[in-house]
Image (cartoon, rainbow, N blue to C red):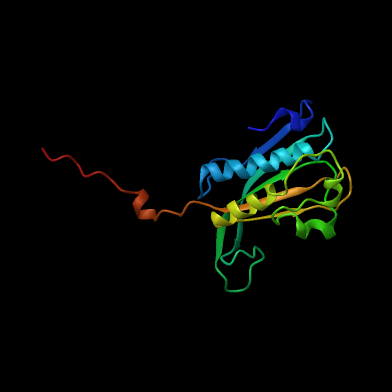
Length: 172
């Protein structure tokens, strides 16, 4: 789904680590759109030949979505997917701009990188529509790159008794 030209036609190592049987409670197409955009950006904003890391794990966060838990606040299990590149990085003071509509960073406006400033805005909109969130961590140091995090809910747990339904013995 990602145009090979975005990777500058150079083979890239895609390192994927996904927890076994991990599922999200959301729409497949929306998740696909988010991941396609993040992987595409990772290719566009990092040097040819550098790897792209994708991880997915289960984390706990407070029901309000804080993730850092306040005393007495119930926690919920979430899938956290990260996409990390080893590229330019994002200056910390420009991070708040990233998820806004039609916004491109000043360095991107002066570059040959094509974009309209909607990709990360749509990622945020789609993640939030599925009950999740998205954010980025970056020092802004070239070569250290950026790590985008997406948190999405896991499927609702089924009651234990529903999983243990037994068949009645045959009556003959």
